[in-house]
Structure formats: C-alpha cells, structure tokens
Image (cartoon, rainbow, N blue to C red; front, side, top):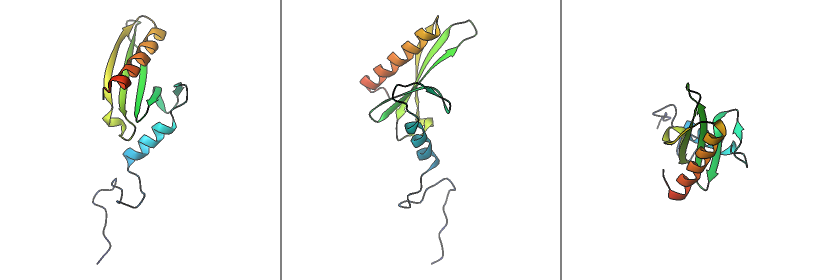
Length: 114
C-alpha cells in the first residue's frame, strides 16, 4: 500500500507522539503558571491553577475610569477556545478588581464552574 497522508494538516498522527496545536497551547499555558500567579508577558492577565483547571484573571480599565474583573476558566488539557468566561463585576480601583477576579476564580475552582 502507498503512503497515507493526513486528512488535516493540523491533525496529529495517533500514536506518533505529535502534538496538536491545541495541546501545544495547553503546554505553553501550563508551563507559564508561576507559583504566585503573577502576570507574564505571553498571556494577558494572571494565571491561577487548581488541579486540572486553569483560571486566567484580568482587571481591565474601562472608559469611565473603573476596572472590570474578568475570569476565564478551563481544563488544563483543553485549548484556550474552551475557556468559560465568568464576569466578576466592576470596581473603582484596579486593586479591588484584581482581588475580586482572584476570589471569583477560586470560587469557580471550589464549585466546579466549568
């Protein structure tokens, strides 16, 4: 039989050890999780991890001078497109928005909101 080609260019061969682009994204995110959840240049916001879940938290400045706290949660094995968005409110200061986002992410971990 002749050599078989892949059906899709982004598809990894089963058993070959190749990684899909989604798996590569997940490994990049897992390796970027710092022990204290500080920001890093390649991923916007801060990354928190709990077991098999990652949470990316953000405090985004709004035009009216407030800050919106945002949380994105996903399984570590899923690509970024599988993130669940959880709004965490709007706050008068950036510090309050970061604290609220972190608190909301930890609640999502505890209550399995994915």
